[in-house]
Image (tube, rainbow, N blue to C red; front, top):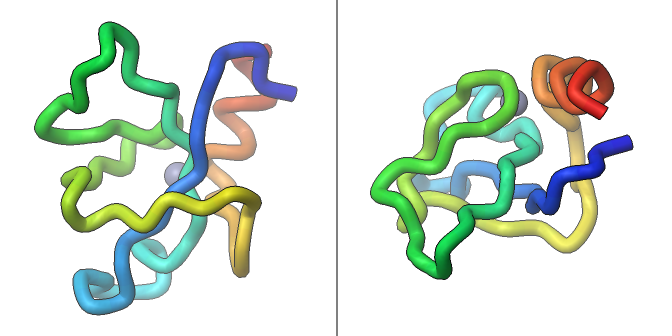
Length: 74
Ligand SMILES: [Zn+2]
């Protein structure tokens, strides 16, 4: 579905402000070996790396915006 390397993450529960924050977002894997100050998901959702909880697999509710963007970009 997604040809580009990516990872799945969501906002840590203590930083979540709502249901959208608890969705699993798909992020393009940062290139260059450095972590950017802000990660931007395919849907445009942004998260600070320190507030992100990376997941091995989608857990709970996946972000529909990310799923659509990923499907369209492949
Ligand atoms: Zn998303």
